[in-house]
Length: 290
Image (cartoon, rainbow, N blue to C red; front, side, top):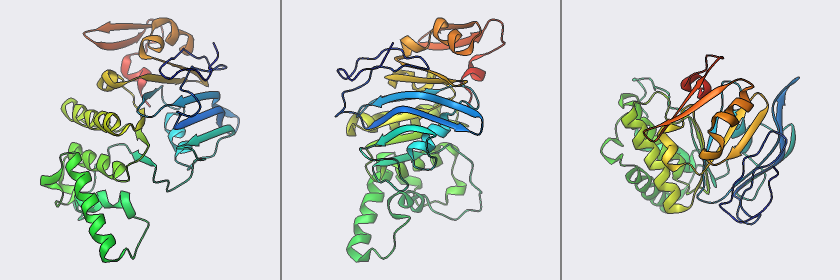
């Protein structure tokens, strides 16, 4: 099935040599055409066509080494494509694009780190600029405060980040990514190492932003269930192949079995998706682990 530029919201499952239906040309804020990425003799993915509309939430899934984080690096301008083209917010990918926000994986920070929470958030606004002047500094402080309040982090914004919990640190990283009011938000496993309650808070913050500001979200994750209520489209990468479609279209036994070339069972229980490999020993965490 091939992807055509049709009405926004229409989606079809795409295979590794075809395309998934996406938004009209003028609507896409992320656009990949015949995109390929490889290292040496190994191809992570090729022939990838993808359109992401403003306000669309796309979950990027797949096993270790399938190229999920590499896709984000391409869109951030940190890794060139091997073939094809990419546009992000109307321009080729490039470093320091203020229209692109990035939420990295949650990683514990050294408890001795004295950088304050508000300083971490401020790096997302002008970490590469100096000499703002008095008026610029006032504007900077106001925007930092607004970003901090938007994620509910005001009461610990002046604490050293090394003393904060993983969930608190990740809220501040979300604020850092959003401070520039990006059109596109790239999230690289932002829920990793967080407990379920913290995962829910961070996922809700990201979803609220995309609904209020029409920000497109590409969300790399090893587990779809914490974000399943928000997902419009899934990009599933496996061993050079891919599928693009709604969760109901992609997260099926038939589709995943085709991708993994082995029988995979997909069960839906209590509003959650559970995946297991009948013969390969795949379980949900292994299938979705990055």
